[in-house]
Length: 259
Ligand code: NAD
Image (cartoon, rainbow, N blue to C red; front, side, top):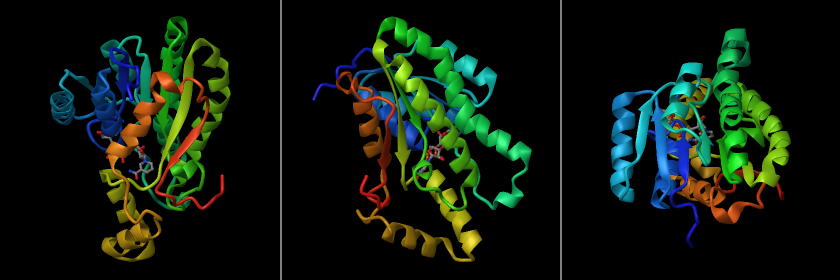
């Protein structure tokens, strides 16, 4: 299937590895003019080179912290007027809610709620004027079913989800769609950090926790970034213009609800 987005411009945040990288790879493969960012210059430069080689087209990159105003300004200077925006940043640390003071909450809200909102604010009018836009926010299955040790994530991402539900309906008539991708357990560094946090909280070793988590997934394995990227690319495609304000759970069947 031709996704109909070759030549479109995409800004993919937090994409030197993991889920963001999976999205960047899938979009580059479709002929999209992709710009990726992450904080560490060597890592993001290498990722861009590798993705570009595999896709047979150059991938632009910059090193910045997307959770800061300067980082967002640099990202939008490197990729002005994107047609496709994939928002993403590192997730907040696990822990007990008693440990989190106001500063910890502000950091989580900045990274996982206010940063995507600021990026949407900066790009949405241009998308509407050009009558095509795709915004995908990488959130978490925690929005649908909270994860006990990830309270900062549960809270911040739910705030973003509520905001997006409203705004998505206001921009759709101009050909702009905003949707959220909700990863379950994907085999990335982030998952390994979460497993270590869970092992500590439960007084178990990481291998035991990993086996239990894998066992609880109906497909019997963790997800891989390429399958996350494939869904991202479809939702960014020319065929996805009637999909508005939705939350796509991609979790191997973990969430047990009928809907
Ligand atoms: P990862 O650790 O594999 O990759 C994170 C990427 O983000 C890296 O490229 C890193 O350099 C970059 N990054 C982190 N903070 C940044 C910042 N402030 N500015 C710019 N770049 C930054 O993580 P992942 O598994 O790909 O997770 C991506 C997001 O999805 C995270 O918010 C995570 O909490 C969430 N999530 C992941 C899973 C999972 O199973 N992997 C599940 C639910 C939610």
